[in-house]
Image 1 (tube, rainbow, N blue to C red):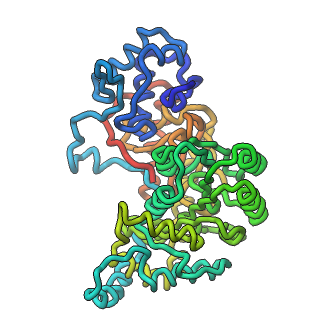
Image 2: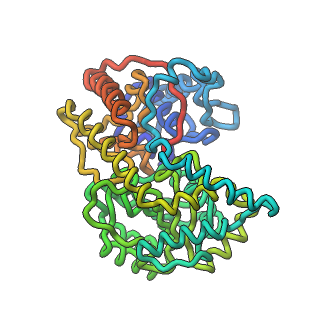
Image 3: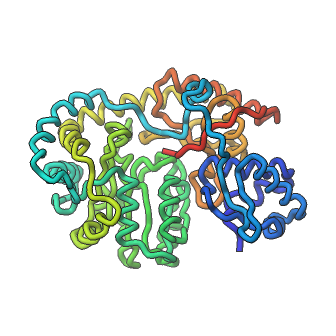
Length: 467
């Protein structure tokens, strides 16, 4: 059985690599979060067998990683992932000058301040209550339900729960209906932290491919029919990271197939409102089956710092969510909920502002990529990012080279389940144009380093989440 380390490395990607290069690849997996702190790695002998290398080579690999603080080795306890004890200096010049492309998110909407001021009387009126809100403020649940109604799905406020963001919502759903050891269908690529959540809840993952041109519907439905997964996690609108959108016809067939085999469909709508110039609007996935569980968020429309999300589910699932939630959380902060009530009343203005910002970001990325002869930008009608084809399996190498130029850049495999997608790279379209231009300039320098084999070892960049 192939170890998770070798799955993430991709044996074909490191064939013939030196011990130093192998150690560098593993270090990249740790820094990108594809290998987690505390995770046990295969023994030197097992790794040698899997990679068809000598025992001395794998011993040297672990020696190098241990020297730099990326693994610990205990007699009888095996080799486990660690991080160096020396922390990056807070507020240092290197951190301030770095451009972080691991975060595909914009700064706050201009209306956030005014919405916050307007929300204060609503918050003040609740001072005489306990302050706990397990399902969420009734007025906010009504506002979220109304948004679903406006998009074509009849929804009652009792079918809505307010959460501390969409990822919090996803974890709550898994805690409520999850089954360890079961299968879960996931898109490849997909949101990395959703994969981590599924791993943590004990799921075995069944990947189905997605590209900028869309889903392989035949593969997806065949995987549902043959694998009969307990759940499927999908991002059907402006998919992260490809930007693709499922058609209504595809949603109809996928929902029907999932329902026939008893698969829970968990649909992530975090990016659903990020339309730039798509010339059609699909119905929400929940319009095609009453059993769809939808998670959403204000983070990409308003601000990532306002941790407001929601779950839309039928009443039987909502009952389970309400029973599970107190075990790790007693509700969502009231101030953010009050602000969200105000913001949801201004959705046309919010989405128009977001579309303008994303359009400018998209144009800046396209302009920056104009100097790359072998990389072209695919059509990007909305969403958070462009999903680039590099033309060669150099994504991890490019990510490592970028760090030497102050650019934090998650490689394509960070979005996959098994070390694939080395030809791919996600570039956010969410930064201001001038910042994007600077990032593209640094990317050009990193690209030249990779193409000429002249990458210099740079200062260590911090391990970061991918958003």
